[in-house]
Length: 283
Image (cartoon, rainbow, N blue to C red; front, side):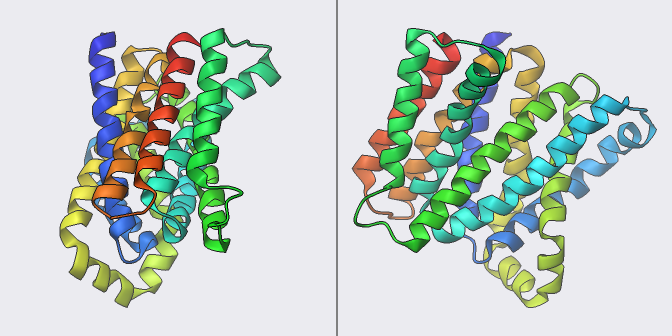
């Protein structure tokens, strides 16, 4: 089962990087993200309506559902801002690396946990990779770069909230229902902006109709694969494997979007990925 879970998570990471590429290439990030998740909500609703409306949830579970919902809402809002100000090859590794950095730190400070030698090596790899790939402190940094880094960092923090919430919620709801809650967070985040800007909405669909439809399939599919893996394998084992998407996201930004600092960003995304795997597997 662990091998199957690992394969699911690798596929999840690659698909996640693909729909993030679509988001970066879109005209209006908020309208694009709203559009793909409206389609996803509509497609999944018939399958999960009976469970969501008839199943009585205990109060503690409701709190985790709300944690996931609002974390997803924050996640998609900060993501749209990060891609508005920064490159995919800069923003994506920071998004994926931030949660991997903070989860062991929280465990050490709040729960008295400890890291092995490989865990500390992994944490050092993630820290160094994030600092170098962000460009903090270099002469090339400008106001837009700092905004991109800040919003990417906030996306990473939001990821921690919804993954932890969903891990508990999966004990009471099916993966499809958990996924629908996630998609609803995306839809609520940009409903007002998208419906208010009818011309922006029409223009986005006119220019990016194909990638909106692909995104509506790939965004929920990437997280559904991860939810299915969480059902059969420990989170600590599979979460780091998903970060293989960090390398793919960086490669997409450099070779498809023609972003700068290619060699450095590829190397640092690989360092971050190695660090994450060290923490998850042997930390």
